[in-house]
Image 1 (spheres, rainbow, N blue to C red):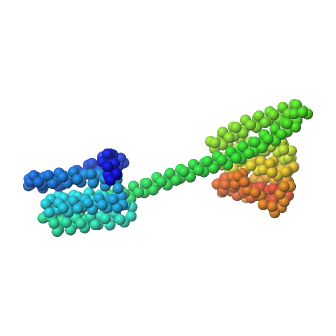
Image 2 (cartoon, one colour):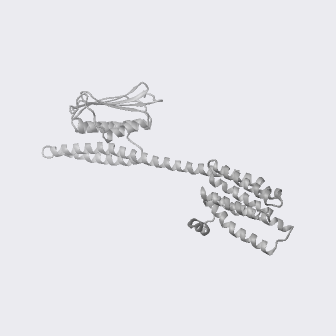
Length: 372
């Protein structure tokens, strides 16, 4: 009842249908055609007007329902046609309206089954009740069949569009979640590395404060530069771009390891990298060096980058003694982020322990050309 009241309050038909339902309602004029040849009595004319007044709300309501309510609308419309069959051959148009409502049962076979019921009721009413069966059945069979089939097909298309729209919303939702996770991983890697460097330099500046003022000032200047660089990296991470790329990550690694007193050995080949791969390698290098500085207790670190078997291979090795051969590396947010990023571009990350921690990241490169 509440839905019926809402329909009467407007809008009367779904907005996506435009004004067409009002044009379709003009088919009610079929009930008037016989009166051009035989004028109706006052009672008959009153009955026609009352029928139209009762049918129009039911007709408008049928555009808003589905399932059982649609079946009720179909049967009530057929009942109006059956009641009028003995007196009005144009009442067959009611079965045309009923056939149109069958589209509310799509998708699936129920719409076609209900259309068969409508045509069966029209045929029975025509041959059993109407004085002119052929004229009565002209509208249901010639117009109602095409209207019903078209309505059912359109109903299936509308259901498909709704399903597609829901899928698009799901994809957009998943994309938003993936973007938030990407930003979370990037911020963890960027801030973890930068803050570790700032903490080390601040500790060193504190030790130098009473002994070497000039060296202390240099460290404080480096802290300021690192903080500004971290701020810039956070801003670019949010938009998904990296201005410094792998060279910037290597420079930052040198500064971090030097501040921590870790000797660095570089074996980095120069070759072209796709932006997506460079992004993954740069963040993996940052996280790996951060782990060396924070957790390894190492005095030496080797960073190598090379082309092997058509792929880019990054290796970070340290001589830390906090883990022994066979020990399991605890997987935190940093390693999880590295694995997820590597997997997203078809790569593979392996972390093992033997005379220190060995990190190896392999990324496939289909069209990589070595720079001369």
